[in-house]
Length: 129
Image (cartoon, rainbow, N blue to C red; front, side):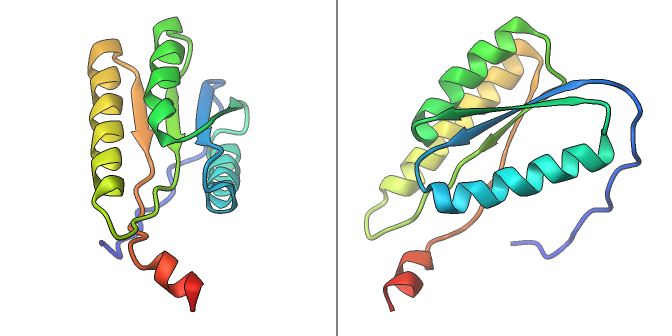
């Protein structure tokens, strides 16, 4: 994983609309992502509206993102979820399916639909210690 941190964009006075789509699953980890993303958007675009929507899990994120993108009234949609890697490849498959679906929404709708990606393969082992 890259250690490079890009510089924060300049503050914009343009009023836009951003939607954060967050998973309820693994909520204690997702909430940190939601808080940080909201704080950053408020800093770089203080006049914008930031809407938070919750879905049950990562699998549902692309479905709701597609519906929001169809309306066409957002600057960007940010998908926030945490998929924990356990002892089976299920998490890798789920992450790949969700990523591909979000990319397809972006291509089909012309709306930026980004996602957070964190490698948490060893997190469960650390938590169990």
